[in-house]
Length: 163
Image (tube, rainbow, N blue to C red; front, side):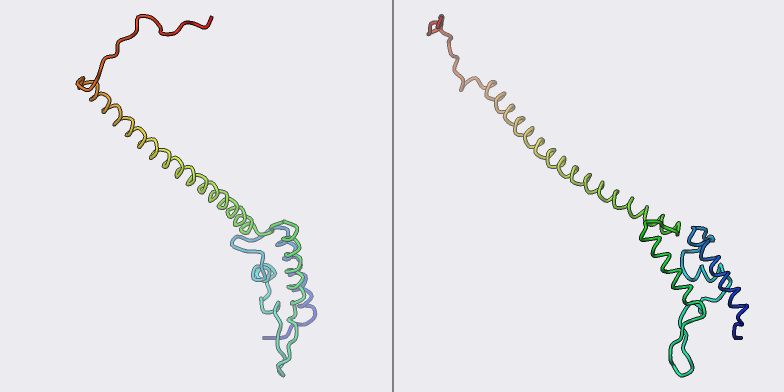
């Protein structure tokens, strides 16, 4: 791979900055995200220029566009901290997470209501069954007049009125 001359490097940096501005403004290509891979593809440079390199003696040196990658990441973090979501897919994911949390809360509430209503139904059915048994017992008692006595009513009230 040939080394970059200063004119090529300046042209690439300008392309990277232009692509950076488009991405940070939310103009992403279809299927792209707000990341270094998309930045490199939009600028027409390789991604390897955004990462540190090693000299022949093993000492690290910055990649030719590493400072631009750092600037891009910093600006992206600032936008996220300000509550602005650049990537429409990330915004959709956040919206779906919030919607999912709300639906889970609603399902939990409905489950609690169903449990309470099931308990109420069980109690009501057991009470109705007990009342039905009592009605049947009393009907049987009325039908078998052998154990019933007829009470005669007094002709006159045993007490006088208070007035």
